[in-house]
Length: 327
Ligand SMILES: Nc1ncnc2c1ncn2[C@@H]1O[C@H](COP(=O)(O)OP(=O)(O)OP(=O)(O)O)[C@@H](O)[C@H]1O
Ligand SMILES: C[C@@](O)(CCOP(=O)(O)OP(=O)(O)O)CC(=O)O
Image (cartoon, rainbow, N blue to C red; front, top):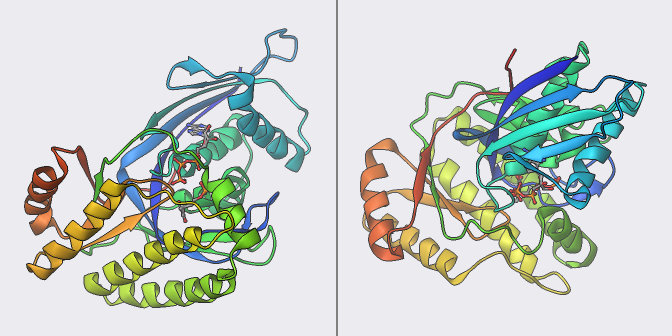
């Protein structure tokens, strides 16, 4: 019985990916840049079943066997990988645990599909390098492309399956940079990232500007990282997040992931900054806010958020590693 086991950490985009140029290959409209986190990860076992078995393929998430509708994306993904390597459609059993809230804008799909890609190649004993692994992860979820590497990672948009890959910028950054995930609401979101970004690409008259600015943002962010410039990193990350959420209001029909508490958190970050406590925010496809700050300010920022937002849960993260083979 062949089995592959892997762990992948989530990543948070500092310059966001928001829109596909090709839905099937998940080629993005713009390049993006992220930090891989240590605090949130997914562990996945991918087991190939004996050919003679009458057992059907299964997908269990956090110890709960998923219904066919919830398993579809994962099953289709495995078939795509099997086809890519001209493998038979073997049946399989996937057991996975998210040490991160699922579908709540905390990038569970980034760690999920990076771990699954690695577990798949391990089970089939495929000789695959990290660039190919980042292609495989992309076929599951765009943001998963970047979780193959640790630290700061760029996803170069490329033009086709071959060159749309992740590139490590600095796998073990020394910059003093922490991320505080503020739990506004960990319920699953109403509109998935996949659907939200599609709606924006199809209908927003501002989409062209988004693309140009995102490419510029990646170049500027790489310069900021090279210069160890926390202020520039935070400023650019905040601008990218605001642009993405502003874009959602310009879709037809418009939509937003922001909740009143999200705006409250944004205002608090601004206030803290005015008071000399330097911090910035970023927000993904959900209401939760992630604060970028330096270690010396973690305690004070945490206390202020708990005071102002009613004892919310706050999880501290820093840089995490790339995908790990657990065998
Ligand atoms: N461990 C896992 N293994 C396989 N698939 C998973 C796993 N965890 C989540 N998924 C799938 O990933 C998808 C969740 O991704 P979605 O993009 O909706 O949210 P998210 O990743 O939490 O947020 P974000 O928009 O910030 O990426 C769902 O289809 C879910 O079934
Ligand atoms: C806001 C984001 O987190 C959106 C991530 O979207 P997904 O990677 O979840 O979308 P699919 O490619 O359709 O699976 C920004 C980012 O991670 O760059």
